[in-house]
Every structure is written in C-alpha cells, then in structure tokens.
Image 1 (cartoon, rainbow, N blue to C red):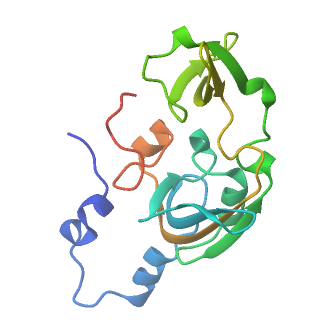
Image 2 (image 1 turned 45 degrees about the horizontal axis):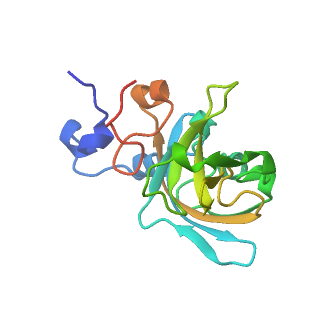
Image 3 (image 1 turned 30 degrees about the vertical axis):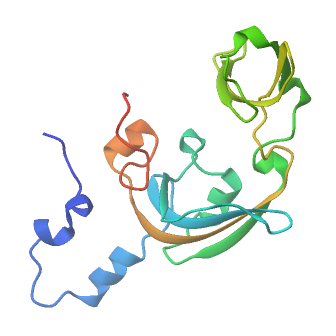
Length: 195
C-alpha cells in the first residue's frame, strides 16, 4: 500500500478537529518557510533583459527546494531561502547563472545522411558527448545539400534573463520526493517514469 500524506487527500479526511480551529494552528500551517527539503509551488515569468516575456507559467509549478536535480536556478533558490507563501521577487541573472555562456564548440556540422529525410530547421535531437555520459539536446539550425548544422547550446545561452515569481505554496517534501530528488503531484514531476 502506498503511503500518502494528509495533504494529498485533504487534512479534514484524516483528522477530526474541535468545532473551532485555534488561530495558532492555522498560522503554523500557512507560515512554513522555504528550506532544503520543502516543495515550493510558484507562478513565474521568465523574460529577457529588455523585458520581453520568454516563458510564463499558466498555473503554479512545483519543485523540490535545495539543489535537487537542478530543478531551479541556484540564484532563485538562494533568493527564496527562508521565505513563505506569498513572497514575490525578481531575480536578474547573468548567463553563467541562467542557461550558461554560449559555447561555439557545441555547434557541429554533421552529414545529412545521419538525419531522417524529413529533417527541418528547429527539430531537436538527443546527442551524447563521446567522452561522457551526458546527453545534450541539439537543435537543427541550418540544412545544406549534404550537411546539417546542429547547436547544443540552450536557446537562451549567452543571455541575461529576469525571473519574476510569486510563491503560492510551501510544504514538506514526502520521503518519496526526497528519494527521487524532485517534486511529485499535479504541478511537479509526473509518475510516468521508473526509479
């Protein structure tokens, strides 16, 4: 039987409260601070240095706070340490703190024959470094008669970005989330994977 937290099924289903809930109980439940091992849910807007919106959450996204699996930018985690639900912030990040500097060594020219017939600019492929187990996503940036140019840099590499967010919820991580190294649930990492 899978253990579940009271939060997953609603506190009221598992606990019987007196007719009046003491104010201090409500305050403790709402005032959890962000620490390593908490699951943080937030709404965010990612924009470039001119303010153009690059990405925006349509619903709160959740991550496991504390440097697990690089789920969140370290500078954002640093800003959110010890904060509570309702906290808003803007973190401006230079390339090295966001998606990295642009690395021209990650641009490769490959034989056209290594790609499917229907390859088009913008398609993405996984590729590995020969001397490493790291898998990188390469984007097709140009196609010539017998050659294809791919770029392994993140599309925002070399750019400064602005990360604006509002924390919507903070809760303790479950033992399973800590073991897996990421948040589970509707706005965290899905369960369609093996560990």
